[in-house]
Length: 393
Image (cartoon, rainbow, N blue to C red; front, side, top):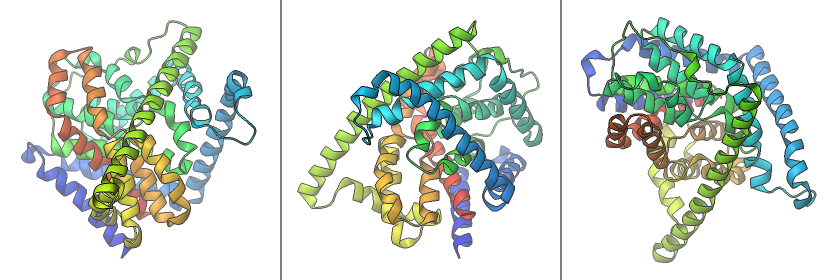
């Protein structure tokens, strides 16, 4: 029964994307099938094989170990401010972003990430028949934030069709940045963070290429120099640290605003109609949570977290989800955790449009015009990722 419900969730996601397609006749169904098969293979391998489980364990432990070195720097700067045994979110979670962003910048400078992204993206383009630019951007989005991923293909923006622009915007919004992966892993199970980052790259392509089909051009060449901007290893370290610091402060500011506003809104709703806004979100998203595979008894709790993420951001939702996890089934934790690992929320529309504005004002206006549709596509991608994970947990 669980498998049938999960398959219904996949069909629902594909069906909504198909209904929203602006060119149903030219949908590349071969690419869609290949991408879905790749998702099944990745998830099956990671969750249902001993070797895959070992990879997740090794990578998770490796990331945790690397992050522990980052805490040396954090403790050096703020160690005296934190009493022993006390966890302060800004220090224990957000400041980790500075360290991971620095590592990401170093790996970019020494060309490890750019080459991996180029060849993995090229492989996806070859087996699916999709454009190199969109597959490159999809893989690039696994490692970099939505702004940085788009900047890496800035030389292609001028000649980019509206459909292709829609796909790269969706991929950026459906992903997360590897620089904040460590922060996520302190809040939800690390294995779902790792697997979801891979699946989101494929989910974004599945949904977006159904909604806005494109043809493959022959003259597309990706220049990995567009990814790296530093001129030296020390420059890369400095840029990474500063970028990470900016992200940590931005996330902190958003959390102060969003958590406070949600508390205010919940208080108003409770006073007026004796039901909180979070509970209303739970009822709205409950049917979606159910077709994703969440047990019926837990759909309200799961739905409220999913709705919270869309209305605010993934950090707010993860903070709300943390105390609920011990009370929920393993399946619900897996599905909701996987759904949360993306930038699909209302504020991301402005972030993506603003990033493109700095490069190409005309294209930015197009992104703003179709912002809600891009958000729908990215949310459907998150639903697809969560559903696929649920099928194998």
